[in-house]
Image (cartoon, rainbow over all chains, first blue to last red; front, side):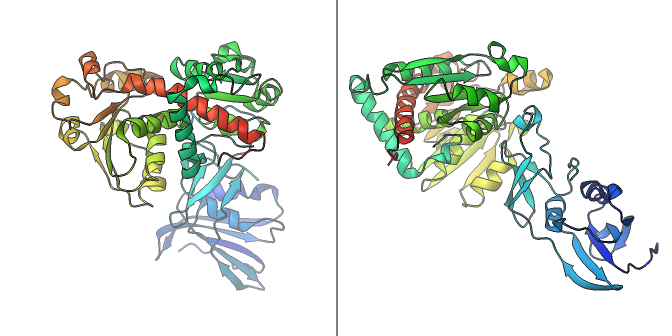
Amino acid sequence: MLNIGVLNQGIVIDHIKVGGAMKIYTYLNLENIDVSVAIIKNARSNKMGRKDIIKIEGTLNGINLDILGALDHKITINIIENGEIIEKKNPKLPVYVDNVLICKNPRCITSVENGISQSFKLTNKEKGTYRCVYCEQSSKSVPDTITKM
Amino acid sequence: MRHIISPTDLTLAELDELLDLAEDIIKDPKKYSEACHRKKLATLFYEPSTRTRLSFEAAMLNLGGSILGFSSGDASSASKGESVADTIRVISSYADICAIRHPKEGAPYVASLHSSIPVINAGDGGHNHPTQTFTDLLTIKNLKGRFENLTVGFCGDLMFGRTVHSLIGALSRYKNINFVLISPEELKIPSYIKEQILDPQNIPYKEVKSLEAAIPDLDILYMTRVQKERFFNEADYIRLKDTYILNARKMSLAKEDMLILHPLPRVNEISVEVDQDPRAVYFKQAQFGVYVRMALIMLLLQESEGRPIC
């Protein structure tokens, strides 16, 4: 097992579906925030077989991590302080998300109309399915297309 | 401000009001010949349409109102790159109500977000077509006399057929409805219809490939055209376009009181020999489309003046 150092203060985003870590990294715009980031891809997992993990040393002020539920509703978020997990949570799925997911339907008005938000509504809580409010196309968890914050 | 983007934008009580008014118009159209005097309907058609546009225009003219608009995206500022949002903001100051057809799904919803007049979705891509649904419902109400205890078959292009999606949504609100979904594998109903409408309400449905096997059980058969304009690949269209052809031989297997509906235009999917069958009601259905649009325009204008639909 690959070892990455223990965080003193930060966030561990665990149980990311394999292949999803870079998308969350992109969404959180981590390359432009003053934090240290370790991305672990394809790690072994008893629960999932394989998974991705993101470890962030530092703080993400003002970011609603629940939004990540729209990208991957099975992730776990661990908040670390003084080297210990002080909070472990699964993101609550927001009913509406704006400008997080992008509609992949080429027939959707969002593919041509400028100036409108990419808006999705949660239609299946168990499966974490979001649908475009304009065309009702679904965007499955960890989609191929996400937008930066 | 009320807009009609999806057929379920009307409650069942409002839908009853709409259909009752339409039936009253059928009985005595002259009574309504000045109902929309001095009112203007804008028809914003970004893609070609014969029946829908002309039936909207006929409806407004029958009500004593006026019409303005365009009949293709090329004839509007859309060809210069104007957004739907900007267009509707301007049109809102020219007309009292508008009907919009657009090839992109969700365009009428975008229009409704920026409009100060009622917006009626006259068809958006393969998504919704609520006034066709109201037309279909009026046809069923007038000729079948009920919405409950019906087995309704949909045949042909169930993937891109927006009239099918809309009518399934509308009929699902009534008791003891069964659906038989007849299509080739490639044109099956989209998963969201099952996930959002059929499964949560435990509405019985089956997906089959044979029209002949399904037809004896049906009270209503809703035929659809395989729409060339919805395919990115012409080879797929050519392969699938004549999968189902309803003819006199297949009609001999159907119930004596089964109704055949079709949103039109028809290509090859219903043989012309079937037109003589009294169960073929698709031309009458097109006629009902004018009446139901008259009723809808009246109710939405009434509502915009502060008088609720019901």
